[in-house]
Every structure is written in structure tokens, then in C-alpha cells.
Length: 350
Image (cartoon, rainbow, N blue to C red; front, side):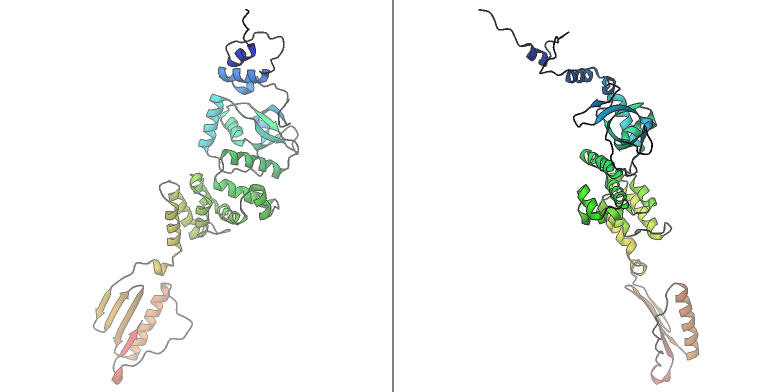
């Protein structure tokens, strides 16, 4: 009895048999898939196997090789923070592994032949800065508005968890600057409207504070930004003391060994009035005429002066002394100091 011959399709699929010149393409092994698997096994860069002319993708958008120097940044870019380390790491990946996924671009409406990036700007920068690749495979999305192209990149980055809160905060403010309301931005991004105000506080921090945040952007959430904004609200003068204090706190927090509770306590300490921040004393100094006492957060001086003229002179000197140190009199008129019993020496109290 004749033996049933083995099915070649199964042997080919498992790799046990390789067809040298098939008469007809195998239904269960499309040729493009086989080419892609072979290229991965050989370690070749994927873009070397792509035709130079546009090819249809499942999405229906054309994919083609585009020289990186023809790709422009997006004016509403969803990412703001790009460190030299990020770009170097992506350049190393492209050099060793090649380009796995296409970037996304839309034709530049005012510069024919050029494109605006929607998603993949880190890869473009890696090629421009380090010369890793001359061209990148790009999926072309025709006729996208600036908002639509930026939202495409935002969703891609969110899926890859490549945003920090500073990126999100700056992006939301860019969207608002186009005329979108907070409700519309919330709908488009999925961020609750009440949280957008906290992101706004982070985006409104002065540049000198944001520079410290960008040293370790992953550490600064919108809660940290809201705390720092208490020292330097929107439109604060860069020379204000609060701006310098916020920058100093952010610099220390960026080291990475401190908690959000520590940051909040530092902000609270800066907001406490100077009079309450001074250390409380327990000093009591005695004089033949009276005493000088520090108790809690108050200072008390009581002296017995021989004549009214001497008392008036001393009071004038004390008022000048206090005024020079920023301690001003209240608008209410001060009462005359009382005479001692029996018409004796005057008592001066401060």
C-alpha cells in the first residue's frame, strides 16, 4: 500500500523544506511575510527591503522613504522635553536594529516637497544629529490640520508611555492657544477638565524653573508643578524671590532622593512670614530701670525713666530704630504713657 506523501505546505511553514522556485505562490505563506522573516533572521535593516516608490499599507496610507532633511517639526508638537541622552539612545537603536516602524508625516501645505512630522521626531533628530540614517520610512497622512497631526502624535506617544507631565502640560496649552476650550481639550485628550488646571500651573512656571525640571522630567508630576507654582504664579517677574526659591527647590528635587512631601514642606517654609519663621527666644535681660524680654514670638521692653523729656527722647529714638528695620507704626494713635503712682518716674513700655 502506497504511503501518503507529506504536505509540503506544513514542511515549508516549519522551515524544514525551503522551496527554491515555486511555480505558484503558496496560499498559506505570502511572499512579503517570508521576505520579512528572512530579513529579520539575517539581521538586515528593514528599510533596505522596501521599494523606493510608495506602497499601500493596511491603513490605506502610502509609505515611502523620505530624506530626513525634508522633514519639518510640528508647531504643536506633543513632546517638549528632548534630552541629549534620549536622542543618543535612539540613534544607537537605529544603528544596531534599524527602523522597525514607520514614522508618520503629513505634507507641508506651504512648502511643497517637504513634510511635517506627526509622530517620530526623536528618530528624525537622531538621524539629523548623529547621521544614523539618511532616510526614514514614513507613513504619509494627507491633508491633516496642525491640530489633527499633533493629536496623532500625542496618541502614539501616550500608547508608548513616552510623555512626561511637562510634555502634556505644554501640549495642552498649545492646543488652547489655537482657540480650543478646556472642555474641547479634555474631550480630545481624555484628561479630566479639573486636572487641566493643574497641568496649566506646571506649564506656566518660569523658564528658569522648567530648566531644572527638564533635568529629570520623569520626577516632576503635575502635583509637584502645582506646589512650585505657589511660589511663582503665572507672569511672575524672573527677578522675584519666589522664582529663585522655586528654582532652588526644583534643582534639589531633580537629584531624585527626595519625596513630594519634602518638596511641599520646602514650599510651605518659603511661604511662612518672616516674623513667624524666626526662632523663638526665651531671653530676659534686666536693667536697673527695668527689663528687656523675648518670649515666644514677641519682644517686650519696659524701662522706668526719670523725666518726661528723657522718655520722649528715648521713644523717638526707638521709633526711628524700629522704622529702619521695617517695623512700622499702626494708623491708630498711641496712648500717652501713664504716670507712675505718686508722680514719680515715667515708665516707657514697648
